Length: 340
Image (tube, rainbow, N blue to C red; front, top):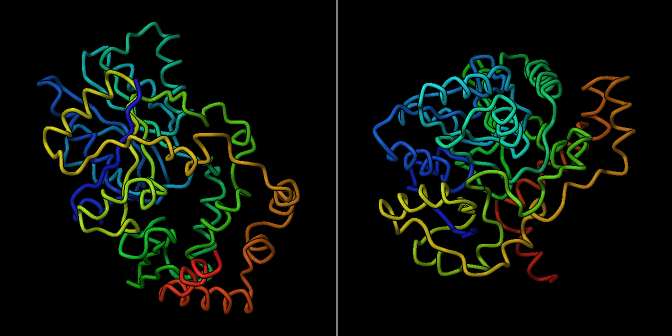
């Protein structure tokens, strides 16, 4: 079974989400499955801005899971907690990278625990940097800004969706959006230099999904399903989710969503979506300068790689600011259309 959908939640939810807010809708549908006790596990920032998996027991608490975190989450002890919940006859929804979902299922098989009441969501994953990069980045941000970092968003929804703008909030009250320093981590991430080497051989980067539902950004929706955008009077840059229903359990949750808010979801009848999703076709490719980057990082530290690979120099900052202005006024997109 595999059905593919475009989904767009309410403006309020989308504003707090990474893309179209599909995760929130799936979780809400999960809470309507039965009157039994339920637990939802997902990835969030803790008070120290460390990224980790935790469990919550109500719809009101799921806000902490919204928005993307481009970091390997700390999942220590979570599989054991899921096992205990299932043994206690609770319904469990687990969301994570495909390797984390597969790891949980393998763990339960080894422990001989039935997963009848386990529902899973996997994300379309490019690969994950280790938490060491994230910790070094946080310390670097605090040094260059001489301020304590208290909040961070990898995809600040109040700015343009396709540009992956980041927001950093500091103890002094200062907020910086889409500046070169706030974009440094994602710049290195999307250059694939900080991704773990094992991710370049990922066996889950295909359409054989391990989760009951797969979610990600619906890239190419303007071409594939333009009517979805027009009927809702929305800009695709503001966020639309790709939702892939992989199993009967996934179908249960999708049907609840359809019954509650059918206008927010529409089936995709074209397979064209696959060509816009590199990691549904193959793993992320290892950069040619990957080994050099790792060596530089280990020998010279984070400050050095921001200058060498992130162009964090005076000239680099000037170029970044010029490009930012060109993007904000749509000039770069206009140039791309003209030169096609």
